[in-house]
Amino acid sequence: MRDPLERLRDILEAAAAIQRHVPSNREAFEVAECPSVPGAVSQGRTQEEALEIIKHAIKLCLEARRELGLPETVIRRTIVIPA
Image (cartoon, rainbow, N blue to C red; front, top):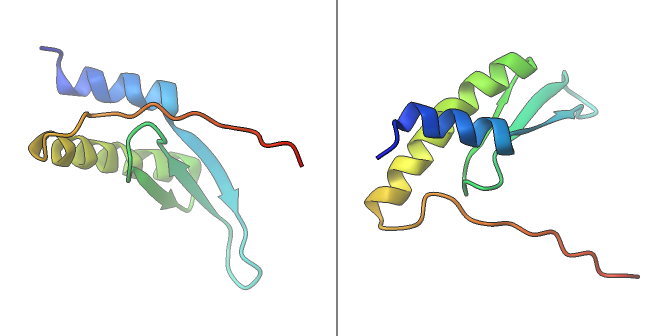
């Protein structure tokens, strides 16, 4: 069985995406999401902070999915529907 930290690193490198959100009445913040791990989303004031927080979120989501007998990750596909 692979080391859980190694698995976490692989997931972060392959799937973490960062988006910058700037609400009209607030300061900008960074949102990190790992689409292959359902529920793994975080935010921070900087990209670095958002990535540090999502590492913890991914770890918790993977633990919860294991306890529930669910696969650790899911395959996501984007489908484009012509207008």
